[in-house]
Image (cartoon, rainbow, N blue to C red; front, top):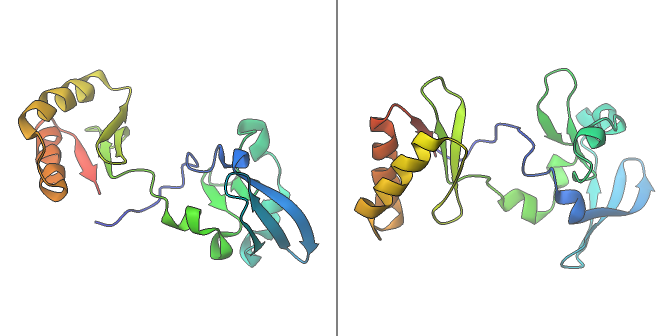
Length: 160
């Protein structure tokens, strides 16, 4: 299954440290500046998200959020208000390689980057550490399959 965003907002919650609005060009057009690369590009508010962009309440919750990221107060999900013209760095980002859900379907952990587990679940952490010893240096697809099998035996489910 390909990566599917669950709109949690974690990816954008600190991107205000990377992206800044260099210029408001009017009519929902902005010049976006990347603080690290110096790249600049024009972005345009998605027409269906202009009202959401006007709501600044996201920044009381996430003061370092991307200037175009907003939580929708109605459904609680995070939205990129420039999704159609967002920068390439945002288009390429996936916040997990494997998403691990506990038996109740709640997020228990994420495998990020090459093979890094992010979790607060001690049972999942123990399974992970034990499995690493047996999986070793398997090729990526095989490693994923072996790790999925290991956590699945313990009642977790995984989304790729």
